[in-house]
Amino acid sequence: MELRYWLTRGALVGLVILGIGARLLMRVVAHMEHRPVFVFTIEGTLTVVLAGATAGLFAAFIYYLARRFISQPWPRTILFVAVCELVAWRGVHGLLPVPQLMFMALALVYLAIIDTMGRRVHS
Image 1: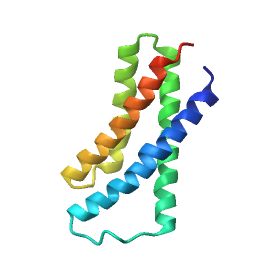
Image 2: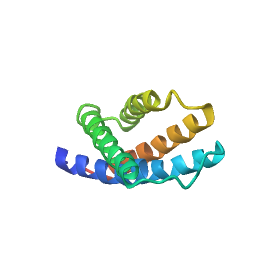
Image 3: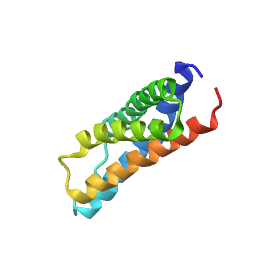
């Protein structure tokens, strides 16, 4: 499969899981921390959703490279998840422990979806 295919998939899944999912998770964290839950701005939401799509785009590029150079599925999956989770960790390391784990789990859901989609494609 060509690069454009992977980038499109990664960005679309990233938009939904990493973008919209992160925005919803931010509301959950605000509720857990007893902060106002209904503070909402269009600009803030668009920023988070587009950041999710962008993160999905970059993660898909990493998957594309791993798929291109590593033919065995499990080593490829391990490398892909490790690299992407390290990048995600960099983004959430300043949060409290429970929100950190929640956002890392959200990233892991995205990575599992991309890896599963990649395993189903025969190229």
